[in-house]
Length: 539
Image 1 (tube, one colour):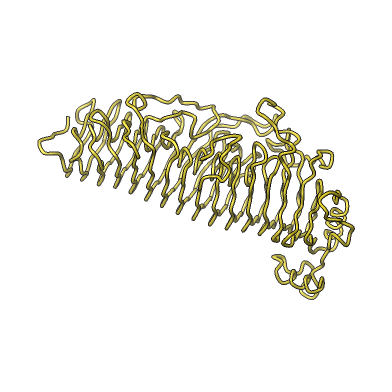
Image 2 (image 1 turned 30 degrees about the vertical axis):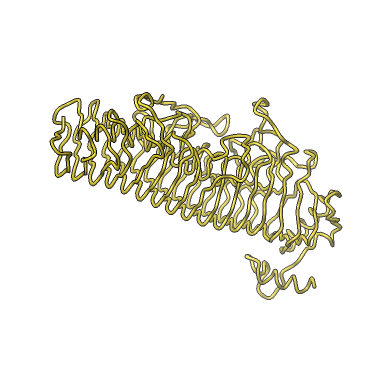
C-alpha cells in the first residue's frame, strides 16, 4: 500500500522527482519514525527526525490519518509535508515546545514574533500539501489589549517562512493560530492555492501575510478571520511585488484585501480578481466589527511606494467601508537603527467591476496628505449601496488630516460624502459609478477637496433634501463632470467653494436638481449641453 501511495505522491508532487527523473520520490512516514498520532503524545521529536531525514534525501514527509501533537518543526530544502485526509496536526499549547527563531533579515517583527509551528529560513523547494488539517490551538495563548506592549509576544504562528524560494502551500485546512496564521517574509516564487482558513482563536488572527515577497500566486482560497484576511505587508526594506490574488472567498472582522499597514519597502505590480467578501460566520468580534472594517484597503504610511495595483471583479457584502485608499506618514522605522522613512507614494491604482453593500454610513475615502497627493486613481463600473442617514452636520464636517495615524477606513467616522470623499489627489477618473442609499442622506455623493485633474463620467446616485448637494468641489483645479445625473431630487447638483477653477459640466441630466450650480466665484464653471429643470439657471 505504501509503495502505491509513494508512486501516487511522485505523480502528484509539484516538485516531481527531486533527484532526477530516474530516481524514485522518497517517502518518510512519520509513524515509521515513531509518531503515535493520538492527539495526546507529543510527537515533535519524531516528526522532526522525519523532516530532517527528508531534508537529507529529498522527498515527502507523510502524515497518515491521526492526530499529531507537536511544537516547532523546522523544515529544510526539498521537503514536502503531505497530510492525508483524516490527518490533523495540533500545535502544542505549551510555549516551551516552540523554538525561538530570529531571522537574519531585519524586520519590524524582530522584537516580538519569535515562535512558529512550522519554520524555514533560506530554504528552497518546500511545500505543505494535502487534505488534512493544521490546528494551532491558539486560544491557549489568548491575550487582551490591556497587555500592551507585550501582547504580541509569545504567540506562535502556524507557518513562518523567511527568505525561502519555491514554496507551495495547497489543499490544507488551517485553523486557530495564536497569532497570524502564516507569514511569508521575503520569499520568492510562492504559491498558496486551495487552502481553507478559520482563524478566530485570538487577536491578530490574520489569514495570511505576504511580506516583502516576489512572484506570488494566491488562488482558490476560502478564509474567515478575526483580523485582516489576505494581507500584503512590507515590514523590512524588501518590496512586495508581482502578486496575483484570484478566485477567493473571504470574510474578516477587519480588512478583507489589504496592503499595509507596515510599508517600509512598499508594494508594486499587484493584481486582484474574482473575489467575494462576505460576512463572517463568527458574529462575535474580538477586534473590528462582525461585518468587517474594509473590503479593499490600500495604504502606505511608513514610507514605501504603493503603485501599479489592479483590482477587478469583486463582490463586497457587509464591511463598514467598501473601498479605502490612503497615503499617510506615520513614519515607523522597521528597525531601531534604520533610517527614518520618508513620505511614500500612492499612484496608478485601478479598481473596476465591483458590486458592494456597505455595513455602515461612513462612506469611502481616497486621500493623500497636504503636498503629497495620491495620483492616477481609476475607479470604473462600481455599484455601492450605503445605509444612508447622514445629516447636514455630517456634510459640513472637515475630517482631521490624521497624517501620522494608523490607517483605517473607519478612523474619521461619517465622512462629508456618503459615497466618496476625495482629498489631496491628482489625476482621478471615476467612470460609471452607481452610488445609492437605503434611506435618504443629506450628504453629497462625492466631495473633492484639494484635487487637481478629476473627471467624473456616468455617475448615478441618490439626492438628498432640498438643502443637499449632489457634488461638492473645494479647491479643485481642472474638473470635468459629464453624462451624470441624480436619481432622486436634490437641492444643488454642484457646489463649488474655495479657490477652484477650470471646471466643466458637460451633457449632464440636471432636471432633478432644484439648482444646477452654486459657485462662490463667477466664471469658475463652464456649462454646456446639460438638461436643466425648466426655468432653472445656474448661479
